[in-house]
Amino acid sequence: MTMLGLLGWTVVDIVGRTFFNAPMRGTVELTELAVVILVYLGLSYAESRDSHIAVDLLYQRLGVRGRLLLRVFAGAVSLLVISVLTWRLFVYAGQLDTGGYTTGILRLPLYPVALLAVLGAAAFWLAVFANTAVSLLALMRGHRDGD
Image 1 (spheres, rainbow, N blue to C red):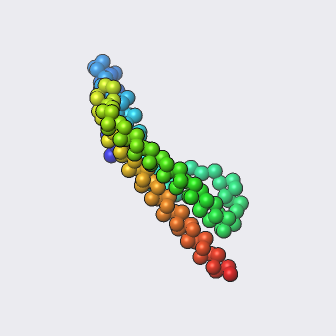
Image 2: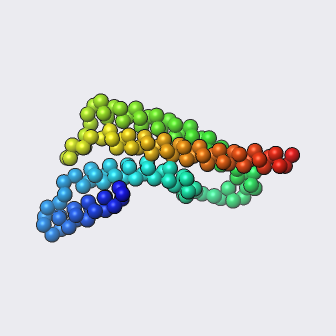
Image 3: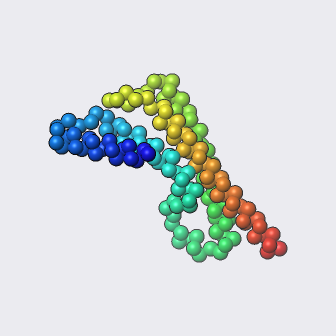
């Protein structure tokens, strides 16, 4: 939805600027806000489909156990980093709300977008947690089978 709205707004802006010499006010602001929403809400979607960009030079050379260990390690580090990111985004959203910060032209409040980023980061954490738990369980099951 965000992408379609952004696309529509941009098309209207280009047509208005090109043919009527009347660009839409706030196009850059809305684009920036929409990109924040797309990125943060898209992270959990990409994680749930395991479709993040990855360099797998080492990964492909490992056996099943090594791959699972690497996924669990990467998941644990990711959970730590995403936890800090989510916490700081939440604090930042509160500062934006308390300070009454808005965009420069349209005067849109910034804190709702920051709260959407918090929601997206939290959903990303949950997706990473789920994938890490699956890898850990597979690792433990495989370890027991090998005993």
